[in-house]
Amino acid sequence: MQTFTDLRVIGTITATDGLFQLNIQSDYRPALLHLSDFSHAHILWWADQAATEQDRNTLQFPAPYAKANHEIGTFASRSPARPNPIGLSTVSLLNVDVEHGLITVPYIDAEPGTPLLDIKPYFPASDRVEQCHGPEWCKHWPQSYEASADFDWASEFA
Image 1 (cartoon, rainbow, N blue to C red):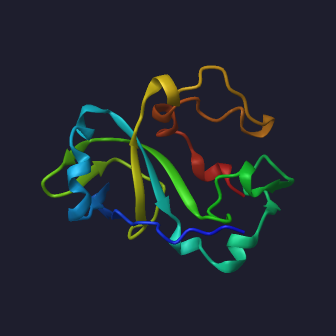
Image 2: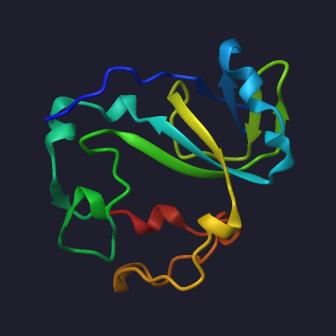
């Protein structure tokens, strides 16, 4: 089994006054140049608070979703319990302060203090899929990032 040890943390996530900030370390701030030209970005983060050895070896588990009452594989979930607990979030960029290394976003589904691994701009040409499908139990979920802001996500998890 091949392993990698050269993973670099580029910053951390904080929460203040109902908003989230991605705090970028000073060495990586030049990489923020022109990120503010984009409305959205993909954020890759390390789910360090769920990175137990047991979680990293769990490959199947009961689906955590209210309308799915069966086992699912790790790769069919967004659970942080996975071989490499890498989280992926698409966020709206409210502000990008290159000088101070602060990216303000309205929400990210990661805990404060979570290590950031990478930031990639959202490109509709390669990131948007117009014709996609998922399992029946989640067909009632919102069909866009914007619509999910008003969705009752709490009722969707068992």
